[in-house]
Length: 91
Image (cartoon, rainbow, N blue to C red; front, side, top):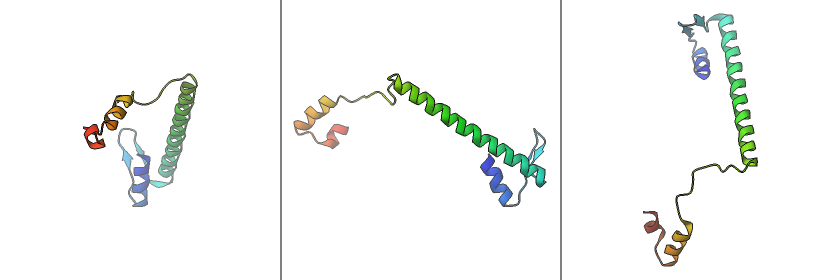
């Protein structure tokens, strides 16, 4: 939403939030929008940091990420060696 507010501001359009009574008009409105943008960006960065910390901790504990394998590689290799092509194997 912050990016949208910035786009509207560049086009000369002010936004008034009816629920909060907040507006992007004038110097105070621009200041509030800038502060909210900075807070949102800081929160997003903190979320990414916590996610990466959790991922690193999980990897250290041996947690495997991603989808479980659904293909038997031994079987695919055996079929390929029998002359079955990649297109037939993929169906």
